[in-house]
Image 1: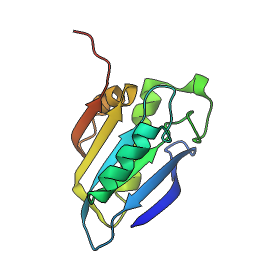
Image 2: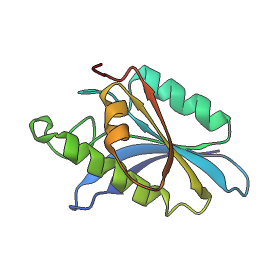
Image 3: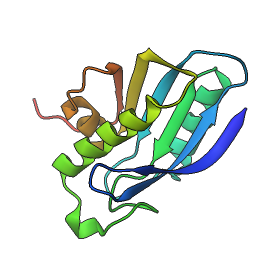
Image 4: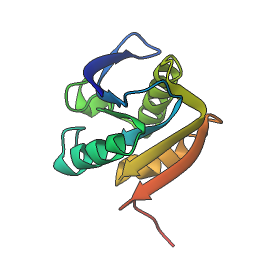
Length: 138
């Protein structure tokens, strides 16, 4: 299994700090992008455990810090929902460059606000969205 710390360039020349795991074998493999909660980061124990578990189930998994969070570029006071939607798009752009990714099977899993952001990201490349503990108002 390949397990790497990476930086993902953004559309506006910043970078997102990320980790990726790629199973051994030829692929292609379905891919999952993990999105953390509000004011959180990719190193939260819940996100790391999900990352590890999914990778052992033969998914390519990317966990990343949204812009202005964790180890990614920027300051938290500049974080917006629109910016976080763009971050998911930038991670999708990166995922499509990975040779072993099955481009027809890319999912996003978001925790808390990360789930809400995933739902707002209307990108045709996302084939499934899972939210965990996301906020809603009925």
